[in-house]
Image 1 (tube, one colour):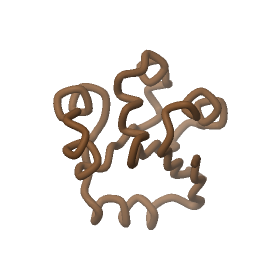
Image 2: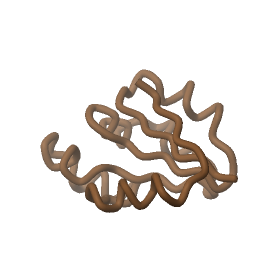
Image 3: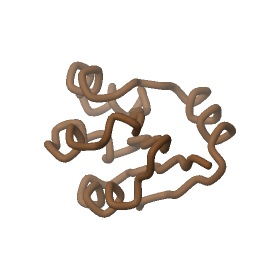
Image 4: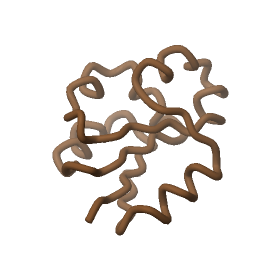
Length: 92
C-alpha cells in the first residue's frame, strides 16, 4: 500500500520525509519545487520516487536542478499518480 505525498512548501520537507515509506512517491508542486535545492531531498531513500510538476518547475526557472533530483511530470502524470497510489497525503 503506497502513498502519494504532495508537497507545496519547502519548510515542510523534513516533516514529510519522516512519514515516507518504501514505495511511496513525493510530488513537489507550487513552491514545493524549490525542495530540489535542499540537501534533505538527496537524503531520501532510493525507494522513494520524487516527482516535480513541470509547469511549476518552468515557472520558477528550476529546470536543470529538477532534472537532477526528480522526474518532471505534467498534469496527466499527476492524475496517473493519484490513481496508482492507495492514499494521497497533502503537505500544505
